[in-house]
Length: 499
Image (cartoon, rainbow, N blue to C red; front, side, top):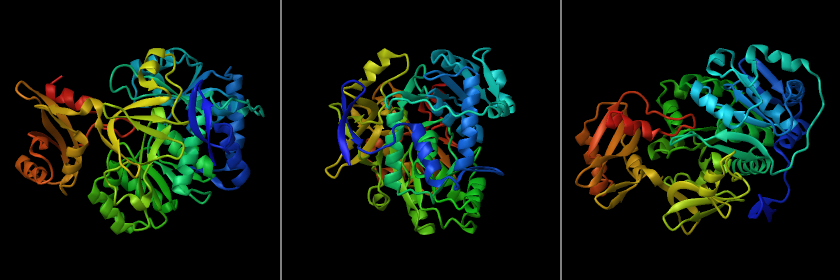
């Protein structure tokens, strides 16, 4: 049952009528439903949901002893390890606000975020201590056992609209903004994943993307709690390690970026791993090349690939592709989630609304006013919605190339390049031109030797002449990406200009 409700002041949004009241209630229900089932695996460590609850309770008491209270911010500078999950759930138990940090961030970036959110405590990797400013107080991983020494039973009641976590956006332009993810939003996104993917306590997922980002937090931690399944932590993605772990742990589900799927297929021993239980493969951050979809259909016919489109501001998914539609709608990002609404603005930008859309940005009223209208978040993506409701993302608004008055959507050109069997990755950007304003340039990672002329001819058979790249940069190394898996086009533009 879905009904209209008013939230965050005057936003009228579609909501699930029956739902948990908070993110922590999702966790409590998992313990109740599957207490003896395996909840968390990391290396040799294995915890049932009951054992996880015991540790979360103790960590919450330890945080309380450290002075953490409802509404205060606790920062997590932790990789994919059990301490991250324990601290995340413990903060929710106390009504505190978790602020996950990117372990690849450097001292100035971390100092800015910690000051901006006014964090009261940082739980961090021991070896990353030198990146942190002198304040706020810290708990290093090697001292984490001290948090576990504190028995406690306090659970703080929160309101659905309260902020559960602040996620700082990748900061591809200017300073990062702190998106305030609510309990309401996390609950709805976890339920969207559970329903669309048909998840149950029998599902086992591998977290190969960073837990500190929206996909790791919501698509993996929150969603596996919602279905009371098992989450297996992988500290860093390497295709060979991932495949071996997937076979050993009988993986059924994961959410990766398309480049990770490609790397798996490139592994020489791919076919020797027993991946027969893998039934759901979510992906986002970039289009999945049609040849990759076809190869997975051949090698793993039971695997349903699902395009997932969303952002930090939408608490992960805004659209999801039904697996049986992936092959027929390979250029679409799917259908709007049940409680979501998508509008195409006058300039072609996709605006998104729903209970999963954040209230706004922490301590940044100007950015909130600029990027939200009537409860709709401005995605920054140019797109379209067809008569059947399938959503298409044509390009980032700022990445559209204007070549002599003709608009070139970089995503379309990238998709054409990725159809070439010798291309692993592709990113298209504009280069300034005194005559036409901008021209099309492609960065391409190759798996075999290809000439520029080969690729021009290949693209000319698939694209209008003005869309065909006029210059190329060939690379043997992967394209630069942020922790969400999105290509950093700003870095590529700087590389072109010699900055």
